[in-house]
Every structure is written in C-alpha cells, then in structure tokens.
Amino acid sequence: MNPALTVKSQVTVPKEIRRFLGIGPGERITFEPMPDGRVAIAPAEPRRVNTADPFERMRGSGKPGASTEKIMRATRGEDWNK
Image: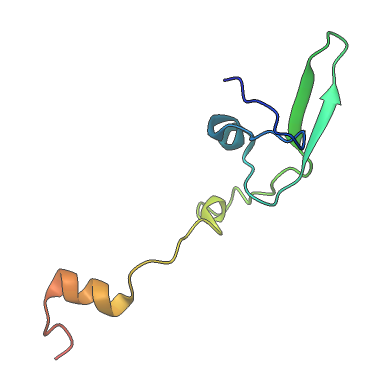
C-alpha cells in the first residue's frame, strides 16, 4: 500500500484505512508527526455512536435503490396490490 502524491500534493487514503478509521467522503482528518519520523492519521472528530441503539452505526449508510412498488412486484408478482 504505497499511494503516490498527485501534482497537487494530494493522496488517496486507501479503502482499508478509511474503513479502519471509520471515515468517509467530506470528513476531516488530522496528521500528527511522530518522533520516529512516521506520521499518525486520525479522524478529526471521533464518530459518536450510541451503543444502546444497535442501528445507530448504520445511520446514513443507505443508498437509493428500487422503489417499494418495484420490490413488491418482483417479490410478490404483478398483482400484489389487488
């Protein structure tokens, strides 16, 4: 995993690292120089997950897809609503 810098000095954070950090498009990250010459990367703001609600971690992860009408016709047939 050795991404290269673009001409604008930008780099793409690999998918595995984004998943590990729990970050996505538009989220800010921080860089911290370490004494040994490495740089630590972390989310600028830790995600707030309500552990009491098991569905909270899924908030915002849905993507638009087929309409309910289309799904019902596919699973129950053309006359599902009659």
